[in-house]
Length: 122
Image 1 (cartoon, rainbow, N blue to C red):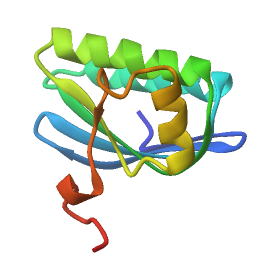
Image 2: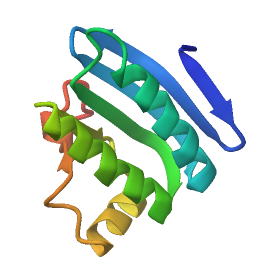
Image 3: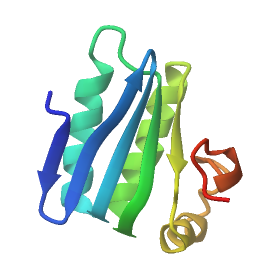
Image 4: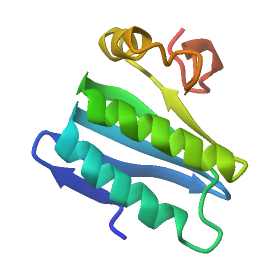
């Protein structure tokens, strides 16, 4: 599997993989075409022997998110929790966070606050 996958207006980059924790950096428009590709990318990651059980998505450079992306976040969260893991969203822009809150998923999704993030700007 490639460490970076680019589609029009969206990049997926493996930032780190340590044990059962993987961090993925996303950039661009997180829309239906991006969600389809990220879903497959994550599925490929999870079927690997000793694949991750905790995935952190860094959304620092995500400037748009739609309902298909929200569906991916929910589905991936459910899948990882069923495996004893979790999906963590970090560096969520106010714009993306507003969408998550509008669909009332702020309590369901694990969203790391800036204070909880090891490289947070203070």
